[in-house]
Length: 459
Image (cartoon, rainbow, N blue to C red; front, side, top):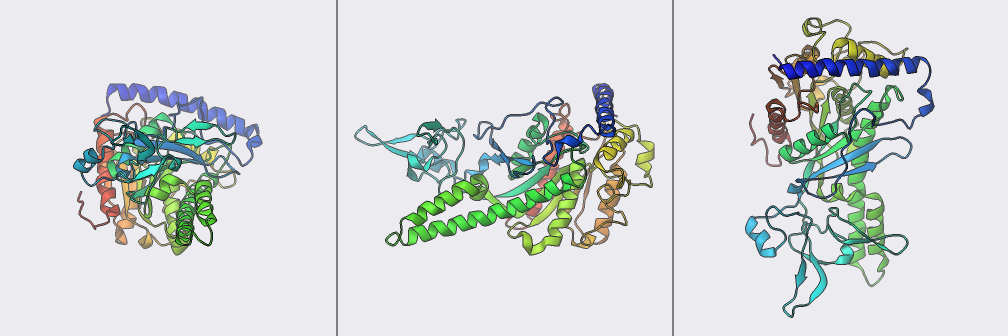
């Protein structure tokens, strides 16, 4: 059974959640939320603490926030692990003098000459000691502002072509479609942990919340990020091609190189362009984010080559927010379970689905609904499902996994004893041994499907 502390916190959590959901439902009935339009909100600062983005590798993972859709509030937070800075061995690092163990990876020393003078040259930490000019603006270089002044940029900026490429994982947070955010302190901690353990670039999706934006806004936002990732990969390839043209014929025009630089700087996200491998893309959804991730996976399978070079090779559903009109055994036995009980989730679905569309067998709620659209189950990629023993939604998630296995899809289930819903992502439980073990188990399974050399990982 969960500890006394977890039980007490669950009581307090449910009281607060019930109050918030009822207030939003009352506001919805009074038409108080229609003024937001389609722009929407992706976080609720009054309910949770946001973690600031930090574009340097101070704790092994650099982060940055990007608003990717000018018409809505859709945003992403990128988590880049320092393993993207590839070095053959520690001996080479010490010989080049890039950084010492334990020091900030962004501090790149100026190279000093034998006469004691120092030229305007630095060693690039992302290019294995290749010397470059300060105008390349790496790590601690200076960027020039529009008024001619210089801004000290302390973030990581990739330089050179010798960058290690990592798989990309799109992470969709939970919160019952009505709360949570991609930049909350708890989601930031979870994504950093996953980025380190899985050795991937994590892109956390900040989708629009209900009731300001009802279904299908959150699902469409997830799909937009998937297509944005494909667009970024294609733009990066285009900017490389323009750069090659510029270097190939300097006599005819020196402007091509400037065109390539401007093209890349204005449109291409540099971290993903330098280090992302979209052909090894994994979707990870937490709670209601699992519903969104499953939808995104179906659409990716349907799109096929239209998403090139993005290829979804696997998905991870962490205690997904599935429900249905015919109750399962766990929905009956555990209806009043910890943190998110069935009554609370029903309120969330009423806030998320319009009155005309409300149904527990809605395709967004029930993955095995007769109204399910998309490709047949046998075309789905490998799917890992994580469930908790004391979660009333567990049986339906297991049933979905069983249907996938019936058509020969690799779909294991990891069930955690004495665990509750959100045991691996809730702020209070993030540092428990169970949460750490869950992240490690996810990493073992994910590495099996993103490895470049085949299935050398076991679980």
